[in-house]
Image (cartoon, rainbow, N blue to C red; front, side):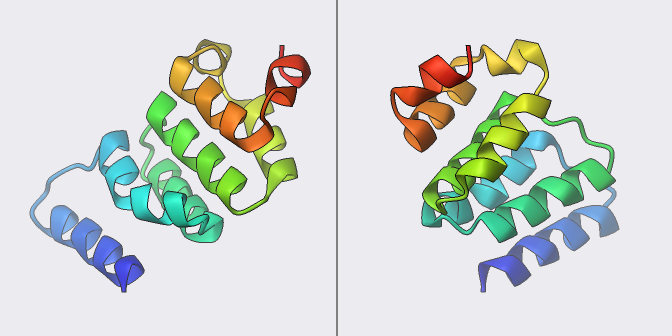
Amino acid sequence: GNTRKSHALLEDMQRCRVQPTARTFVALGSSSERLGDWQRTLNLFNTMLALRISPEQRAYAMLLSAYGNGKQHQAARELFLTIPLKYQKDGLVREAMWRCFGKAAVEVFQ
């Protein structure tokens, strides 16, 4: 369903020579994030990287939230440690980590 629609939209954008942005991928991944479908969210994130689109804080927060909602806490921790420091301190990223780890997020990731 949604995966096919996401891929179709990206293909349409490429055919029309419209370059997707990080926000395009965040919009496409928001439903899978909320459902905890971390595999689909990760696939979109990796597609974004393959297209050489730099993730922004919303993209990192989306993937962190998908990991948290999908109970993939180790993957969330590993991702957090690879996020550029300027985004680690961002409110959206910190909120995603809080949702994933609760109060422990503040202690573990300072």
